[in-house]
Amino acid sequence: DSHIQYERVGADVTMKCGSMDWDAAVTWTANGTDIDESHLNGSYLILKNVDLTQSGQYSCYEGSSWHLKYQTYLRVGTPPKEPVLMCRSNNYPKGFYCSWHLPTPTYIPNSFNISVIHGTREMVCEKDVFPKNRCHIRYLQLFSTVKYKVTLTVTNPLGKNSTTLTFDEFAIVKPDPPESVVAKPVPSNPRRLEVSWQNPSSWPDPESFPLKFFLRYRPLILDQWQHVELSDGTSHTITDAYAGKEYIIQVAAKDNDIGTWSDWSVAVHATPWTEEPKHLTTEAQVTETTSASTSSFMPPPTTKICDKGAVVGSGAVAVCWTAGLVLAAYGVLFI
Amino acid sequence: MAAADSPSDALRRRDLCSRGIRLAGKMRSDVVDLLDTYVERQGLDASASVAAVEGVPAAATEHWDEQTGTQRLLENLAAYRAFRTLLAQMLEDQQEQLGEADAALGQALAAVLLQVSAFAYHLEELLRLESLGPPSEEAAGPTSLSDLSLFERKLRGLGVLRELAQWAVRSARDLRQLTKPSPGTSLAPSPAESP
Image 1 (tube, rainbow over the protein chains, first blue to last red):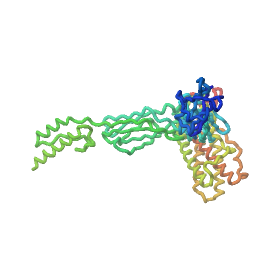
Image 2 (tube, rainbow over the protein chains, first blue to last red):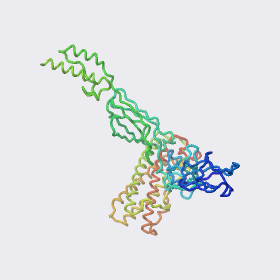
Image 3 (tube, chains in turn yellow, orange):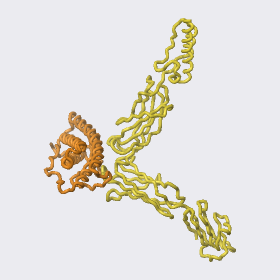
Image 4 (cartoon, one colour):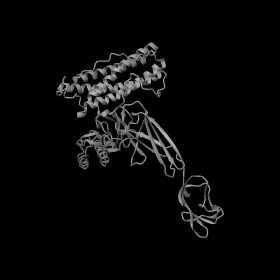
C-alpha cells in the first residue's frame, strides 16, 4: 500500500504500520534510512512538530521478515495564504488577462479556480499554457459601466483561500511599454537627440485606439529627469541636451482616453553630436613660435576655454594648456 | 449615397470627425470633473451602484467592431439627443432644488449640456453628408421626475453622468473608426437605395 499524506508544518504526525498490531515488531525507514526507535510508540511512528525537511518516503517493515507492510509519501506543507491577483488589459479592446501567485510557497501542489462575473453573466477565463498562473478573457461588451468581479480560489490538501477583484472596463487598461526605442544624435546639433519608438506590438489597433506617450530623459551624471508628454506621433527631438553628455532615455505609453501608463520602456543611451576636436598639437606649436602674433586658436562656439566639462575626451587638457600658453605669451609681450 | 464622395465632402467629414474627436475628449474630461462635483454637492457615495436608469441610453455594446459607420452615427445621435434632454432636466431640477445656492454645479452642468448639444450637431452634420439626414427627434418628452424622491433624482443624475462619461469615450472611438479607410467603416447604405 503506498499513498501520499499531507501534513501541516508544525503538526504532530502518527503513522500506523498498515494493519500491523500496535505491539508488532517493525522497522521504519525514511527515504531508505532506518529511523531510530525513540520515534516509535509500539509500531507507530511519531513525528512531532514536523518541518519541511521531513518530507519524504516513509516505509514500515515487519521485524523479522523485512516484508514491506506500509509505505507513504509524507508531504509537509502549509495551507494557502490569500493569493495575489492582478488583472490587466494590455490589448484593449480585445480583452484582458488575470494573473496570480501565492505570497508564500505552500510546498505542496495547489490548484487554482478563477471565476469572472460581469453583471449577471459568468464569463470563461481561458487558462494560458504559459505562464501557468494566468488566464485570458475576451470582452463581449465594450463601454460598459457594469463592473467585473473576478474571484480566484486556491486549494490544496491542507486548505483553501481566495481573493476577489472588482474593477471596471477602463480601469485595468495598461499597455505594454513602447518598443524599439532608438535615440540618435543629430549631425551638427550638439544639443539635440532624436528619439523614436514603436507602439507595443500587443496593442491591436492603434489607429482606433491611439496611444499617447511620456518621454523621460536625463544625463547619466544627474539624477533629475526631464519629462515630455506627447499626444501623438512616435518620435520626438530633445533640444535641450547638455553638449557632450551621455543621456539615458525611456518612453511610456497610455491609451489616449482611459487606463494607466505602461511601465517604462527599456532604457536607451545616446550622446549628442559633438564637433571633432581640431588638430591641437599643430595649434600649440604655432602659438609657441610666434610670440608677437595673435593666436589663431579659437575654441568651438559651444565650449569655453578651460571648461573641461564642455570638451570631449583627452583634448580637454590640451585646450587648457594651449590657452595658458597664449595668455603667457601675451603677458610676456606686455611686461 | 451611391456616388463617391466629392473632395469637399471628404474634407468636411474629416474635419467634422477630428473636431468631434477633440470635443468628445474634452467632454469626457469635463464630465469626469462634473461627476466629482456632483457626487460631493449632492452628498452621494462615489462608489454607489446605480441600476440602469430608464431613458438613459447605455453605451455598452456587443460587436462594437462590426458596426457600420451609419450605425455608429445613428446610435451616437440617439444617445446625445437623449442626454441633451436629460441634462436640461437635471439642470432645471438642480436650480429648483438649490436655486442660486450652487452656481458652480449649475454652471458645470450647463457647460456639459452645451458640449452635448454641439456634439449632437456634429453627428447631424455627418449624417447629412451621408445624404441620410438625421432622423427626426422623437416627440415623447423626458420621463417625468415628479414621481421620484429627491434622493432618487440625485441617484438618477449620477447614472446619467456616468453613462455620459462612457459615451464620450465610445464616441471618440466611433469617430476614429469613421476616419479609417477600410471597407468595414463604410458609411454607404446598400447600393439599392437612392438619395
